[in-house]
Image (tube, rainbow over all chains, first blue to last red; front, side, top):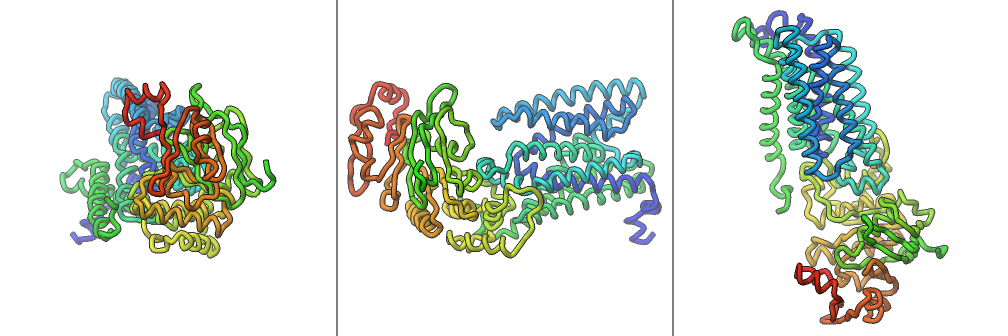
Length: 293
Length: 272
């Protein structure tokens, strides 16, 4: 077996489910990375995670009803994001509490819906797919909708790019400059809903946080300007996703018949990238540029 | 409002949950005037600045801003903000956001935009900070960058909320000198709040003194006087000059302050 065959096992590039996984995975990774940079800068990582958990109720409802699961994730995530911005809780502690409570409600509903699903289908496939992702079982019919969702999220972030940067510097400053702080918050929340829905489709609702926060956190250690931070985040998220798909496909040959979950590999690759970025970032930052005590 | 005034505040009244913060505040600011807004902590300085910016709605009264200095074109430096050291914005990015940060869409680089950013960084003496992340600068350095951010559109009015708080003596003197010089250079009226008037007294044209929800304004020597401030506070205060510094002290604290003092001795520090 040649090295190339070892890395790209026979059938990898000709395999339909692999194609779908590569396309939807890339879309999810790119959008999560771009939105994630701003989510991290706005200190809304927890909200991003909660949104994904809440959206799992929509995903599991979709499995139960037999409709496109992406629509389920999307609908509930968008509702939750809109509600979150509408409630407009300013106090950070209070916001964390409300977010935590809503996260619990969402996962509780998911527990019920997935239980009902196992009664009907008597398998646990839906539970694994909703919570931890199942990339090789994504139906190809989802591709157009996934690409549309990805495009919409990127356009939304592009539109409010400057107000987003301004308000991550200081909300007061953005407001004084007439940058529409609430409108910016709402558009970001909706883009976040799109990103976590896509990520939930690929790595599962619970692990979507990894795709959202990991590449962004790594990128912010490497880049000192916004465009580069976005580019690094996209590169890391995308590479980890495709790398993860490849490794998971390979793993069928390591333990014959039993492939390991794609999500596991993606999350591990992101973790490694984060650690490396920390080391490189420290090396890039001369002592004189470190934060004054 | 005098025709020439850049800013005119008239009978301004602001309350928070029924408690008045500003009752009847009025003053005017002429173009290029350098004015200190002085008051103890909690006297309503930030509230007044936010009302001028249109960030909160006054109960009564009005804030008029000269047409050439429309609300969106007021330069503003907020009270000490904590900037994430990992925020991927260099000083020059922050100044550029002052130029067009409220606009939609992706920024297009242009020679004009770069030149204006460059000019402003030079004006505040922050050229050496241009390519450094703003979150990794010291307080005084961040202050310079934020001033450049506020001035890059050449506003006719610049508001600064406690720009001297948390600065050491040397940085304080530098920032004060810089602001005075910029206000002359760009003919920008400057209103900056501070709880200590001493570093400002040598350079200001005018003072607005806030106490007891009201304001008096005028030349520093006309305002910082025992009779004027006693009338403003509603009880007797003494203006004392020691070693070239001006200190305002309350000789006989009124009942409410004495009661507050008994609860929390630190309270005295808040009477300037």
